[in-house]
Image (cartoon, rainbow, N blue to C red; front, side, top):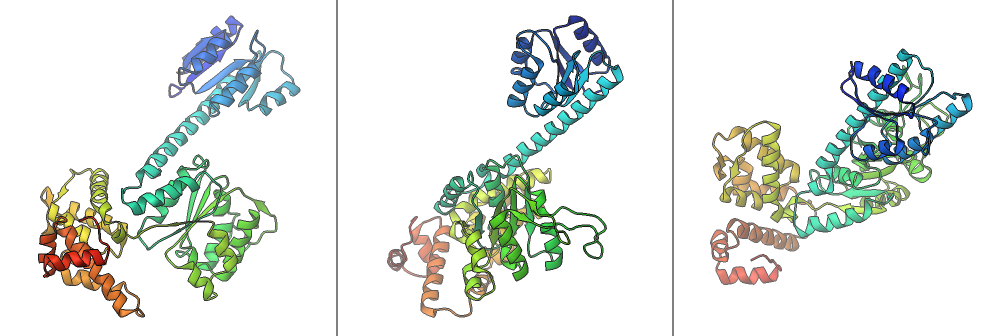
Length: 459
């Protein structure tokens, strides 16, 4: 029995049409049968069909023309061609145009049913794949990047311009800023969105394993290589390869990656055959590659190959106005993932979240939201429910100081810290200057002077 796959049959011989319809309906298929190809093509535009079975020789519109029309408009719908004028030449011809199978009349019922069963299975697989692709695009599309700040809007404008191209993209930013999410958004906004998105973390594997992971290996190329294995470059053919933590590559792997970027070809480990691939590379790093180039740690020619389009992701502390939106997004996500009711953060709790420095960026914020939703018993999350490092002023200050480099200009650094403290006080005071001045222990006039000095707006 089938799973109610919908089969469209087109045959100008009504006796064959009736026989086929009865045969397939007895097997549990949903069948639409017509002797008019024009009616069939109109029906295809209005209904969801899984498999098309068409006669080859028909008046006005031939089976080959039906095949070409279906392949152009619904490329995932398998088409079976039937004909009483079977020959090797005509079989080769229709298969060349994309027919799923070729069956000559008179046909064996078992042969026909097996072919239709295989075609229906292929259609089901394609349908499931398309649903998965749509779900992935919905989850990782550009519209899923949360934020309205100028910093993130500038990034999205750049990404929207770069995504349709074939250009290599280098995403930079601190850990936890959402580099892989942005890489997926680039992929799903590109013409490659229906092809694979393959991700590799270059820091998670030792160099020997990483080389095999990227390029694949031949059977017997090293101890444990019991079979040939395709690498990530081959798996990403036609799609996008995301190389995270690209700054961790060893010099040998840097040379090999440079060749792939230049020539789009490589050999598997232990192999001699060149493999050509069509890939787009998106790389990411939380390191300053230009500095690594100056130190001789990273190849300058590879850096320039990767740095065609650079997308710098701002840290969360530079887009604080997005924090309430991100909190609401994570509350909804965590509640749905855990099948639990949503909760709300009090205004004061949100103010504390907006004032924190977030050394772990968006990833840390998501973890905090999830922890609060899981552990806090009530429906409202207050300041007392927040982790100690967020509600404790001394811990906040220490976490911020720990992020600073050892060698720095003291006067410049103190000014930056003062400006950051003023911004945080303003946020916690709901942008009320008198209240912010009280938090800081200074007069309102002094606060206004410093706001002007540091060009702090939003007050």
